[in-house]
Length: 65
Image 1 (cartoon, rainbow, N blue to C red):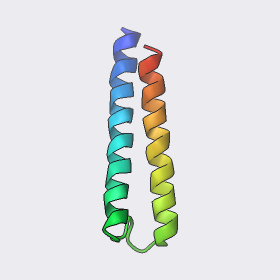
Image 2 (spheres, helix red, strand yellow):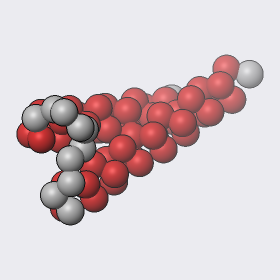
Image 3 (spheres, rainbow, N blue to C red):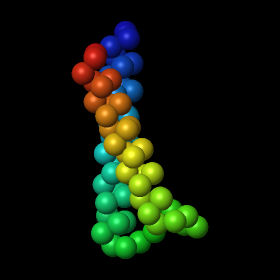
């Protein structure tokens, strides 16, 4: 039962992380703000950091199922 939960969590984290990285990349290429009212450099850096973190966490969950 725990492997099903870890697989579901891993999939959710990996999908969210990948989507956040793609979204951040598209917004950066189009020179659109990643977050309104925040420094463009800081928002891009934090979104990239958290996207990579969630993707890595999701992959870690999926490899330890």
